[in-house]
View 1 (spheres, rainbow, N blue to C red):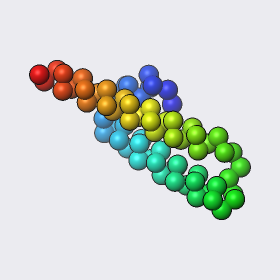
View 2: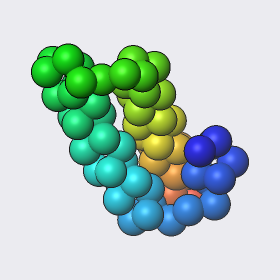
View 3: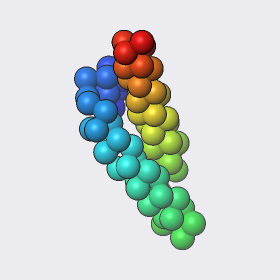
Length: 69
């Protein structure tokens, strides 16, 4: 999911997406530890997607705080 799609979502939807990405990341790390992971790039993609969601959440929070002041 790219940043433009994430910017269209509400903060609650973004938080839910972040929880899902963290679960996915955990599952991928668990698969890697047990030797079942075939696509190792999935770990990297999940981490980067989570970081992207966090960035958008922080931007939305900063915009909200800026508009209140």
